[in-house]
Image: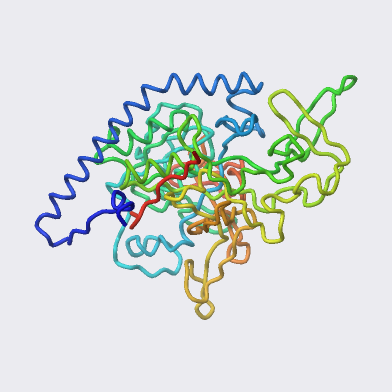
Length: 466
């Protein structure tokens, strides 16, 4: 108990006259700690950039790697002498997690019960950090409530769509596959959103939680990105010395090049320190020692069951400009299904969501239940809950249960005939959600409010090996 004492807090009854003063003192102390830490982080930014540039040059890679048309992975650092990357992961939808039951009555067109709390997100600031680009803050669904704080101008569908899931206003009422509704309404549809890309994450998160960008400071932020691991399919062209060879949807191994690693060790890993500050240990330190009133929400990852399943005739490893071709691999050469390669997809959660103090969110299909002949969105004792096949699962390498919760990440075709809809980056239209990946680049344009159819009880110290 004596060893734990520095990490425990005294309980003060809310009716105690000293309670308000105590909260003010705690908040002020935390703010000062965060501001000092933010200053230290910003002072080291040039050093961080030099570290990442040095890693990129030494390993022969760029800081930003194209993984598909319009999609990129960002260099996070190195592991065992090879580069590690982060990229966008899936996000959630609102209705099936019963968020609408917290909204004012008659907000939605489907059968709904209201708790009477009338919550809309008014006067609440939410944070979002994205790996591949910026939010289109001028989208009509945001009604001027979203600010790209870091000034990033590379607009991205994924960033815009996730921000929409959080706070789109439900401005447009339109038809999708014959169903008319405010399809883009977000969970907290009147909240303000402070948006960032992850280039300066380590300094920005301290600034934002301290309240540099708003008062009293961010209390919750979303992070739908994480390490890339296991397998991906990619189309590319290479020169074999005589001719150009085009590969269509070839299997690319994102684990270590060495055959000594049949399984990608990044699955389930408690990632320690990376240059930009989003290692699992670094996040646990942030939340347990400095931003103790902030909640980081991370996606569990999309890699469960990904891979060729059995040994393909050929697979590839791409490191920078170097291409390694593995023809007729041995059946036991790699784990051909991500994670442990087992039937259930265990051990496929990816850092930083393996951190102890973050809220890790997995994906399920639409959750719904029936009363008589009527279908209701949300959970009940007879609800249909189906884990998304792509959603990362635990345990972590150190045996912990992850994800912590699940939320809707894809449509259930038995419940509706239209997909998840969210704001897009190129217009006031929308993009159609594709299960387990970035939003599909299928867009429809909206005009004049109509559309053409188409806090913890205990925080864990970071684990760092000596």
